[in-house]
Image (tube, rainbow over all chains, first blue to last red; front, top):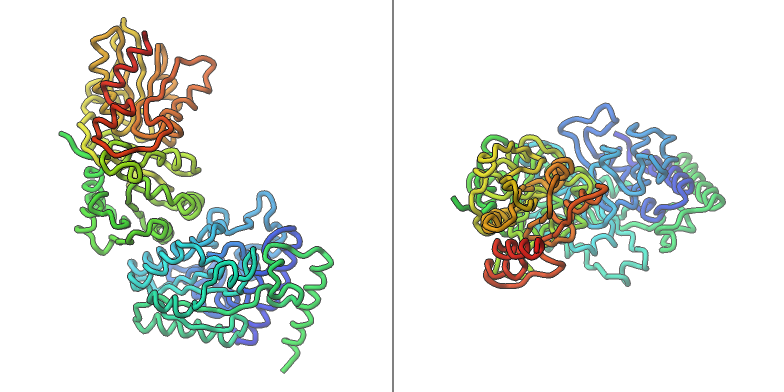
Length: 285
Length: 317
């Protein structure tokens, strides 16, 4: 397994293809892709079992569902590194005939385990998978990433209510709480706090972390692993506080970058910044 | 023998639970009404009571399907298909091998009224790519459709069932020597030669009314050639076109909205022909349901045997 520092570097590297593919596609969602790339990198390269490459998927593997489907460029960058898709295919994002649909599509690209994009549906599907795995006595766990704006959808709370009933300790929901949505800050559009207490009161085991601190992210996943192995009955919830557009100074916390992509000169500036930081991370301390 | 198609479904599902261990069943606090409770009692470990949360039930069923299960999820047709976007994305677009079972079809449920009646469910489900749509006419046909849905069909399918008992009509197919096929229309009665030929397509509870109407009409100068349509999607275009040959009039009979239901299926098929006989769609005419006695509601909406016969007489002058 890679070290925390290596994973932080890898996540930073993924910011480059995310920016590149979105610029090439001329549409998409940079803000919410960048906010969760640290969480996803830690998950796919540091925690999930049995997904090392397209050739080594095994029956007891872990599963991943991206409920906030609009952030899918982050997932595509990871899948390319893992070999599930080709690096050059990233530049076909959103183009006619591409497997890389604007939102996840499990029929065209089966490693994407649920078709999502209409918000609020992924946690129910993840729950169903967790139920099926549990029924079969399989070891695999199901991870599901949601956006904070997304959980304004009522269906999410139906799933929040039912996953504890079925004792799904093999289910881990991860909230990419970047605080922004299309019409403005989440706190203004439709306030969600207190998030930790809400999920706890529904019967979930909740941990709250800084979603850009690799040690904290890995720590939360390790805690989930222990929780699952201990025979606990509760589903697990990671409340990850993140920054929308993280890693590109002019995008950070700017709602405008939710669904607007960089122009070529903005791409170059963004990638320049990312690379400068990367050099610091690799060279430093 | 008279039996509701939901009861026949519940019994068949419990039998299939024995034969096919991948079957899991989900219900949203209506297991007593949808008859999924028969399975629940027999196989509690494979039954999930999801509470009054249909959207979550639909998504969870998709997830179960992705782990290799064959989920049957049950509720009233209107409640289930009312959660359209979840069915559209999590089930249909995802190609999830899920069986959506909607009971309490049509105004035939009677006194519970408008909010409980599935009246647009076929229209909604037909519009979704990959979705099969099935509606049996009686208990025996429900078993046959269930066999097909458990053994052969892959991908999502919607099964529409009645609350009320329906007479056993299946012997009619044997009488005319018709072969039952899973996705084809089935002949129940030939028209008497020498009379005006009215080709009638009926589905679900509508078939029983059409069969009774056929007897009433027989004493006039007209005669019904009656076909049952249990598979609304994929629709049997070829069988339908062959059936209307020589017809003086075509009728469709359904306890469902004529917008998007059986009437639309037949209209869409006939519209592809250079010439075709006149088609009149009997069913709920762009209206909501209401409370009342089922028989009275069938009269009100023109779906009862008596009203079908009257309509036929009027149309043929």
